[in-house]
Amino acid sequence: MTSTYEWPRDASSEDFAALEQWLGEHGWEVDPTVFMAGARGPAVQVRRIGGAWQDGEAGLLILPGEVAEYDGGRIRIATRSAAAASPTP
Image 1: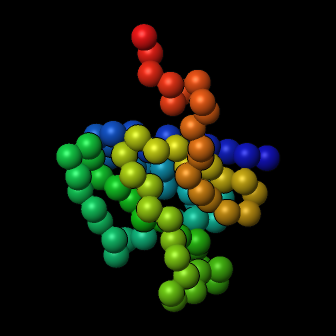
Image 2: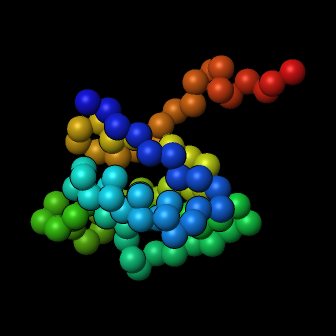
């Protein structure tokens, strides 16, 4: 079953707590060694929890406004549908 979480622009501490909970439910966590602040809010680096995490394994950087998707095995950035990507007239 696929599950998604939208990391909002200008994320608040409540958004951060909700992301941590969502990640934890899927065996992932926010990497506390990586912090990136930007004009649209913070980006977060996520990684697998515990034994599944290995030094040098690439995590996933989630930028403000992106949607993370868990597919039952890994987390990735969800692709936007053509309709969502089309400009509104």
